[in-house]
Length: 205
Ligand SMILES: Cc1cc2nc3c(=O)[nH]c(=O)nc-3n(C[C@H](O)[C@H](O)[C@H](O)COP(=O)(O)O)c2cc1C
Picture (cartoon, rainbow, N blue to C red):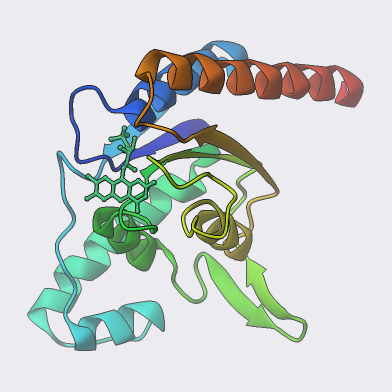
């Protein structure tokens, strides 16, 4: 099982979320002795899905449309990446209080009935085997966890929906201030979370 890193900041240089996701995945690779699969939604944008294809994709229906076949192939690839991971890293800048459009596109490609979730008698059931997700939220003036933050709770909801067992939130807010301070603080949060992972592994051994 690998670590899957999803980057979505439009800034390819000096991005807090990218710097932090890189630090985290290097540490995870070392600690879990595993490889990292990276998907960059800005360097490799996903195509937009038209309305009809979106409806069919979401419901896992068949369709004869040519564009649907392409979307289906891509969706299957992205879902396979999720199925092959036990640790997901979602690095999200806050744009207008929500997630970047490119990240929402990825979510629309991977949330598919019968594959990553299904509806049981008690409601939705997640179908991935992901043990944990790290959600890195980078923002400016809107504090992570505040009523203005529609990023971290939304991504937690998506993770719960597809069956992620544990969610670890990393707060990278305050980009109006010194980026070094934000990154240093996020690294502390990560080191703390990873030391908890270590002790859990020892308890479980
Ligand atoms: C288009 C755009 C919209 C933004 N909207 C918000 C916002 O609603 N709230 C906020 O606190 N910061 C907002 N910001 C600031 C970013 O969230 C902040 O700079 C963050 O660090 C970006 O992530 P990055 O450093 O990984 O690029 C916005 C920035 C951009 C470019």
